[in-house]
Amino acid sequence: METMKTRITELLGIEKPIIQGGMAWVAEYHLASAVSEAGGLGLLGAASAPYEVMKDYIQKTKERTDKPFGVNVMLMSPYADDIARLVVEEGVKVVTTGAGNPEKYMEMWKSAEVKVIPVVASVALARRMEKYGADAVVAEGMESGGHIGEMSTMTLVPQVVDAVDIPVIAAGGIGDGRGMAAAFMLGAEAVQMGTRFVVAEESQVHDNYKDMLLKAKDIDSVVTGRSTGHPIRVIRNQMTRKYLKMEEEGATLEELEMLTLGALRKAVQDGDVKEGSVMAGQVAGLINKRQTCKEIVEEVLSEAETLLKLK
Image (cartoon, rainbow, N blue to C red; front, top):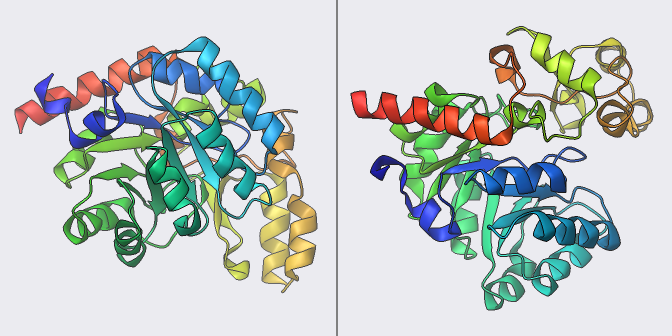
């Protein structure tokens, strides 16, 4: 429908302005290809994966869909240089970036016609990314799962929209058509959802993790790591209780890192939702059913279109 054609759908060559978050360990080729096939933009989360692993993911995604998909490059990864180059070698057309400034890769990506979309948590960073040649930005509020900033989606998105001329994608706390419609009213031209897609049928996340999200209530997420300057939103469990107690007692960064070493993989792949890190946004309390990616995309879009027409 006309309401859902935006600068983002045009820029990325997608049918629907819905992007799946590039979540570490979660965003692999089964999920990314299914979201792209549903008309949105699937993302592969590179996180700290090496070159060969990501090359395999990209090729398997291509086998499953001929529609656009992207790679999320975590700039703090020791393999960031390799992944940045791999994107160009494999002809991936969209990159989102997190945890840093992608400036040093811009020239290489631009000459290969890669669309670059950094994730930002402040107006200052959004402006800086526009200056460095970003095609769009994802303005992500602190309601989101995983690493978070300080501003809420409701306050961040309109301020970023006012500050830059490039299109803005809203993220953080969006899990249904109401959230999408609200984001559009704030000036966003697409939404990025993570937590909602974690429980998708195509998601390879362990059932224990999915079940924990489906049972989550509004108050079940907590932020760990504030003392280290790297806050992370997760669902409360035994590990978070230990972590928060250690933080309170003044534990060192090294001690805290030892507690969470490999904790996300433990939860996502092994299903250890007691000692693992169950990353999820505050929107988990809204999510109560498993659906295919196609069903999720169509339901969210249909609800948003109805609401935006009413407005």
